[in-house]
Amino acid sequence: MTTVDTRRTEVGGRQLATAFFDGAVAALSVIESMPGVGSPLIGELIEVPGLRRVAIEGFPCGWYYLDRVDGLDVIRLLADRQDLGQLLGEPLGG
Image (cartoon, rainbow, N blue to C red; front, side, top):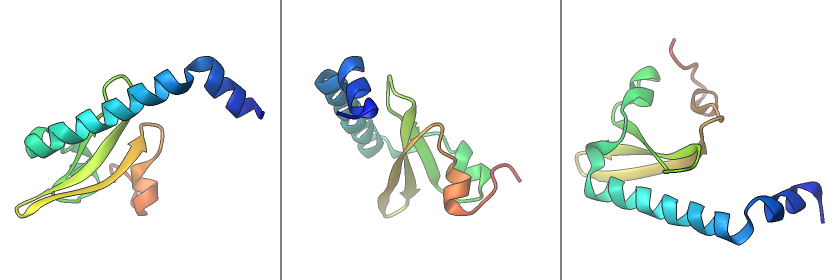
């Protein structure tokens, strides 16, 4: 077993994975029922109209999605430490 595998098992294992999965699904349910609930800040910073973020409670990550007139487009789940601007090829905030 590698160090990463050992750490995952020691730190939380199946219980942590289940809590994360349940939190991710719950956040998607919130987005589906109330599309405007997510923060528009990231969309404003990188000039992508309608881009919003909803956090996954208890975890340092969130869903990024587009709130459009004709529906929702879930873009991706992204950890807070990842740089969305870099992934999109845009510097954040300028």
